[in-house]
Length: 134
Image (cartoon, rainbow, N blue to C red; front, side, top):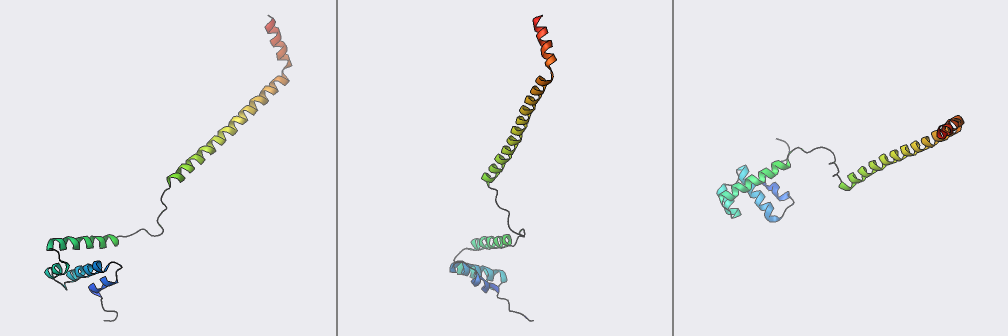
């Protein structure tokens, strides 16, 4: 068989961790591969069998969690509550600008219509004067 020989439990020495953690990991890997018995591992780690079983399960769960599929690409930026508030206020400003322009146009239209009504109806003024006299 071509290729490199498997490193096995010795791979634990390449992990970036404290010396004690790497030694414990190597012992746990040796129990998994069958290179070390549970009793020998308990003596090496100075713990009971129940603690060793729990420790192995925790290590395997952590390894399995690290192997879970991850989404590709950059993670989305966390939503900034201030940015959301700024966007909300900007939308409100734009709405108010539209309302203000509509109000200005209504006022201008009303003034124009009033002026147009005054200019074209001198007869109405006469009629209004007649009605007031009676």
